[in-house]
Structures are given as structure tokens and as C-alpha cells.
Length: 400
Image (cartoon, rainbow, N blue to C red):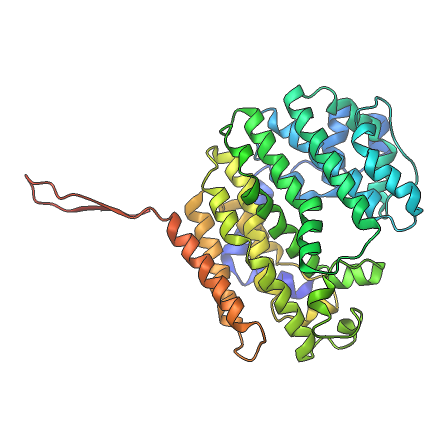
């Protein structure tokens, strides 16, 4: 923590970004009271935003970029899925009860007054579910087109989570499918909400493949980064098909964090995540509204920054590795359009390239995927030349 602060201070652009973010108004709204007290003292909509702030402060900041009524729709969408995810993550729920809750959660979300007690592995998650009737109340006031998207995604996600509650993530196909259920569907659902709002084209919700990739990149980044936290909690998400190439047990990595086998496995999983970046760039090219663009782009550059930090980094096996707060603040403030998105994606791609080691078993594949990202970035830079003016004989060029 101290090292992170010192590093931020000696980087003027990051230190300035931290100050700007604090003064921007994006972080001014705070909720010091426990969620239980807020549930008793604020209206349903205010509770939803307080709960969002408690369970995901970074998302609460980013969502403020969204225009108009889309904020409420996305806020509720996130809380419904956070409630569902809290049930999946609670390892103390008997399997039969968990399966029932997961497969029917989309119906509970439509029942006025519904909530559930003593569920969730963190205090704020438990309080969210204990006061879930307030989320339901706001959910039922959303436009039918929004509710249809949320209900459909919640149903698919709940059934997918239930399927994986009874089996392990073994193959890479399992890994992709699991990440689809828990995150790819979020990308698809958000596309549906964007289209339903009218702020984006109706065609966007049809871009399911690249929307799925948006979610897979974020989810895989989190899964790779969260190895230590998950292994300590008794959860496993790393696909056996990959980790078994380098160790006999998944737990072995935390005992030998700096071994070449541990780092090779880590790098293999980072390489797997990188395959989704070109699709994410293709998706971002479809976004038209500046605020929707920022909402979508910021998590993507955060993911790339995280992948660049965790690649070949043995600390992943010792603790929960995060990017510097100053860097996060800079990414939040400066990722505003396709040009800035390209700049940061390119920056972290080259950072990854500099960390490559030809001795790594996946060196060639990692290098290939990084070059493909650079190609995808270059494809977004609209380079064309206007024909020379025959009168003045002046050639004009427009780049980007």
C-alpha cells in the first residue's frame, strides 16, 4: 500500500489524476452508514445506488457516466446479477437449496417484497439480499423493454451457474462456457439495454459474439488475478486442462510462486485472455454515444492494465494483485474516445511485449496474440488521403 502511494506520488500524471478524480464529483457521493441502516432510512432508488457503492465502488463511479434513465436500468441490472452471484459464491448454502435459488432467481426478482437472509460470503452482499425487496421495487418500475432484457439474462445466468455448481471447470471449453454464463451474458445484456434505451443502434444487441468477448476478457482477467483469494476461499476457476500441464495440484502454485512452472501457467492463462481483445476493439467501434463509450471502455483498459501487471508476476500466488490507484484514476479520467482507448490498449500491449521471455512455453502464442491486438488497433485508425486539389496543387491528409 505504501509502495503504491509512493509510486503514484512520483508519477505526476497519476498523482494529478487522483486529485482530479476527487474534485470531479464522480467520487463525492459517499455512504458511511452500514447498508442495513440505509435500507431503513432511504427510498428504494437511493438504496440501490448506496448498495451499488458498497458492493462495487469502482462500478458505482463508472455508471455515473451513463446518460439518463440508462443509469437506473444498468444499476438494477448489476444489483440483480450481484445478488445472483452472491448466492453462487456462498459455499455454506446446501447444494440442493443453492440450485433452487440459482435456477429460480429470475422469478424471485419479479416478486414484490422478496428477500433472503443469511446468504452471501460478505457482509454487504448479505445486506443487499436481506433488503432485496427494495431492488425489486425499482426493477418493477423500469420500462418493459429493460425488464425483458434483465429477466432473460438473469434466467440464463442462473441456469448456467447451477450447471457449474455441480461440475468443475476442467477443459478450456468449460472455462469459456462458464465465463460466458457469468460475464459474457452481462456484455450481451448491456448491449440489449443500450439498444432499448435508444442511445445506441438497435443493431448493437445483435452483436452477441463480440459482446460476449467483452465479458470474457473482464472475467478471465479477474479469475487469473484472483487465484490467491479464490484458493484461500475454497473456490477454483482455473481450467484443469491448463493448470494440470504445470502442476499436480492447483494449490501447488501458492507453495512455489516463483517456479518456472508457476509462471508458465500464469502466462498461459494471461495469453488465453488476450484472445478476446480484438473482439472488444471491434465492439467499441460500434458504440456511438460518448457516455456509453466511456462506460464500456474504462473496464477494458483496466483489464489490459491488469493483464500487463500480472503477467510473469509471482505475487499473483501470494496476494490479490491490483493496478495502482493513480493509474486507475488516470484511466477513468482519460479514456474518453476511440483514440484514447487505442492509446492505452497499445501502451499496455507493448508493456506486455517487453515482459515476454522466449523461454516461456507460450512465448510464440502470446507474441502472436499481442501482434493481433496491435493490428486490430491499427484497423481502427481511419487513414485515408484526400485527392490533391487540382487548383492549388496542395495534398491534404487526414489521420485518425
